Amino acid sequence: MIKVNKQARRVLAKLTHGLEDPKDHKEFDNSPGAFMAAYVENIGYFNMGKLFSIAHYYEQNGDLMKEPDMVFIKGQDGEYYPMDFQQDNIGMYQLGGGD
Image (cartoon, rainbow, N blue to C red):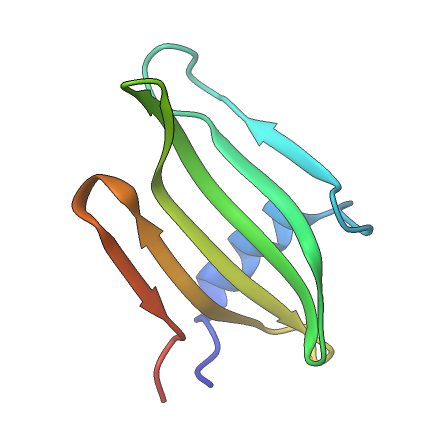
């Protein structure tokens, strides 16, 4: 698995700070109405570490759409590793961060 770069690690550390337990979550909306809010959630544990989802959402025809939703593992080594990427409006799903 490939870890994210140093700049991305700093951003992810700020976004996930304080989300210790599964289902802990927070919303970042620095420009209401101008940009989509970012939702960050601790979605559980994996044998390598904690799983975090970071997503934007919007509603289309009554359905909640992900644009996009990214899942990362925060490894026991403190590094972040991309797990999957999903963007509903284009039907894209990609598993893993590559090697």
